[in-house]
Length: 121
Image (cartoon, rainbow, N blue to C red; front, side):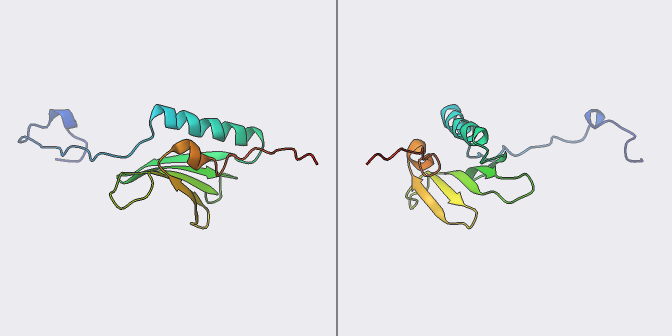
């Protein structure tokens, strides 16, 4: 038999057990809306230009790029809840330095979402 002679659905082998997919960490709708809101403001300001999303077994990562061909300038990560871990969310810089970590996404995103204020004297 040559590869491609039969369709996969026509195979009549024994019962095949497919393992259940491992649970992955994902962003909830509210979390994703908050992240995309920040992303949209930064794109409008001309600071950010691209993003990538990775859903891994132990964390979900939203990476932000200044240009498409570069490494991410920031990573917004949601970690699985581990007993020894201090926070579920973190913002990590391109150098790997954790800028902020915590249980509340809005407070963690505050490290990136600093609005300018006019100082009057």
